[in-house]
Length: 124
Picture 1 (cartoon, helix red, strand yellow):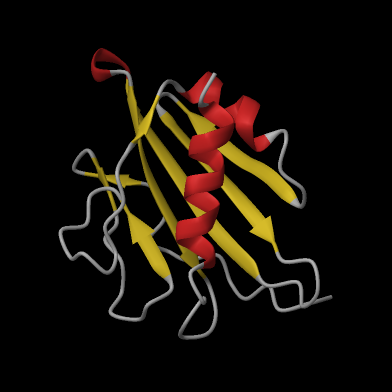
Picture 2 (picture 1 turned 90 degrees about the horizontal axis):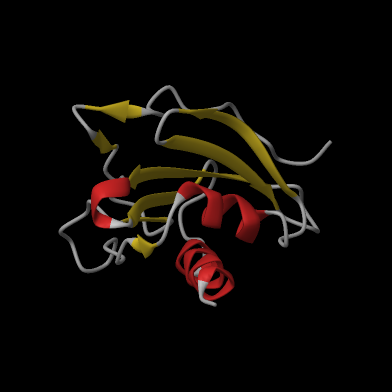
């Protein structure tokens, strides 16, 4: 069964932005201003994101509406679920991203590495 935890109530777009990160070091977001949680937005479109996600194991797209996409990533060993959200800004050809662990305190950099992997898969 693993360590899925409950899907957070803070998912989604509020006032044209994704939720910020908690104080714990297990989240990155392109809307964050704190260096420890900040990450650059992705270059491209939601179609590029979907294509990248299709290449990543244990990844499931849960929902997509307009310029928003939500996916869950499940860890191989313990079955931990991480929530990853994308918000496209087509006029700027960027996609904002938020990747956060549902459980635990530190993620040992996994969320940042995941976003960078998605970025590399989106690069032609």
